[in-house]
Length: 418
Image (cartoon, rainbow, N blue to C red):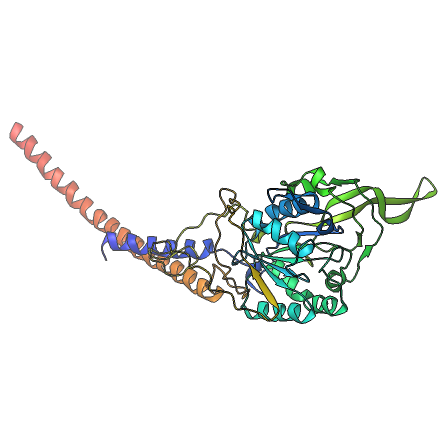
């Protein structure tokens, strides 16, 4: 075997080993992957009922809050979507929650599909589970304005679809809600409660709120009264906005032999830019995190271990959404879509939660590849050592002959000089 082939064999084995090691692991190599989470804003407000538009059609007060909230949610949606908002519990009518979300959505360049009534909401969740609808954001109308969550059928449909809402957020979808009707949230977080005890002009951002809601201002969140705050176990949701005049989660504790009551400012808006309702988000699966370096195992293969052509495929536009019974689609107004932050790359959600390594490369395959690489390294190294040994023996055999030859030459020179 030539020296070149021995070197190529060893280097190929090393590439296989490094490629297997560099393949990214998901959830420790087994089980379903942890949720990456989506943007969520849940408020105890009825700002749908405290807003409107100016002479030019621009939203005011509570409706402006809704626009700003969507501007925070939309860029953080990582789930594959068609750019629409699924409005649950509302219809397209003037002067109510339905018009409020239509006006706010038009300013963000999004369309709205309405699901008014219990059967329509139930149909939406059915179609969502089948993949026949693919909204970017689920919006729950709340119960503080006209054409909103105002009947038990709608409440029951939301409770029945709570698991779908949770899965939607876990996959990177956006969620926004208003009002005091949060039975569907309590279906996901049984230890959470809502308290109907509101106020107005007393809300402020928490540090988490300042990070998650950079497009909102104090005047936006105080654009109208609020009627509900949250207590108990909030799962993976952060407190974004609190009231400075209402106290919550009060409990007794002993301080210097005295029993005192400790309370916190009431949480009025909860959620986050990338959260899961029922669990903490795994930062290792955060799409905004800095990716680790990857060494492609073989020429022509991507870092996920799958064959690649070396070209970037062109995204395929989403298919037309199937019409659901009871749903009304409202196109967006001619408004410029909110630009995405630089550096965010969107791609279809192709994860299947199968617990594979390196995208779709199974763990067993990577182990076999790694072992094969180690074997190739060992074989190349063994043959290389054998060749060195043969060379060393040849050098040792040649050394006495060279010495004898030099001796003969030296004696000839001495004889000639005499």
